[in-house]
Length: 151
Image (tube, one colour):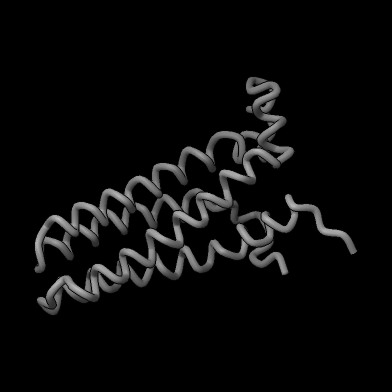
């Protein structure tokens, strides 16, 4: 059985979403726990944020490569006005990309601001807000109609 580069990357990208969601959830829970318990930001807040950002960056890189291989994205860019009427072409050609770039930006801003916020409650509060917003966008941008696992 031959697997195309597109289908292989799509499978990896689809399954990696669970690691993105898990790392985001862990970063949010760690920020909430640190805030409520008055813990120092390092290492708990810093490590969970770095893992979340790293997994998000990998997922974004794979998604960006998929943009160049995807028939839905190609259909969207070939005729954007016509593709707006096709759910999958509109979603993958525009909506998914924009939402996930925004989620990635929020996660990076949250990591940077929480790092500069010091070592206490302010750092955790900053991480909690930005990572939570990023997680909400990620949840909104996932194509939930696709199979949950691409094994």
